[in-house]
Image (cartoon, rainbow, N blue to C red; front, side, top):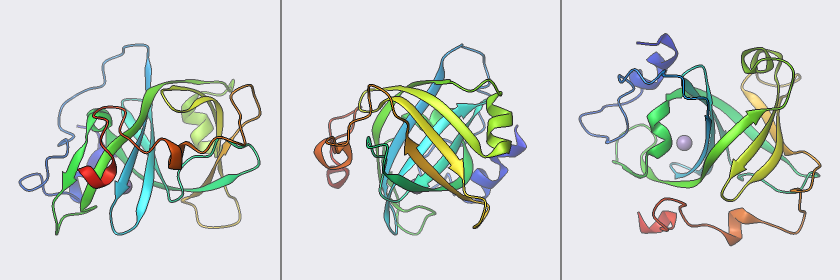
Length: 187
Ligand code: MN
């Protein structure tokens, strides 16, 4: 199907890993745009921030995870597009495979584009502003491509609104999966 997923498929061995194969044509229109964050304990711990755009999950790896404090900028490394059904994946990627290690669905929900530009244009411009309706994260977040470093480097920043809260720290206080209730070390 989509050439966007070629990189995703090339990196994985689906005879060993139970991750989605990316072959199902899931580009149906359903109005609601998915948002998910997966905690992933691979070679280093990180949080994979993913949003549905044009039938795939645009993805960034956020080493420290998201913050609810507008004064905190979190590095977000753009990674390969993932298939939409990856948003439901929770499990252990077996040893010896790309991304080996446990994955949990740390947060999930829907999002809205709050810029006038389309999501496709916003991604090209390196300036994404979205409203999250997750179970742990709500409100406006910006993803901003840094102009002065590597092309894959972005920053994930909570925008100032009623959901901004410098005292919350959901990465440490709400570690459990929103799907199974398990923590990453229980997978
Ligand atoms: Mn990952």
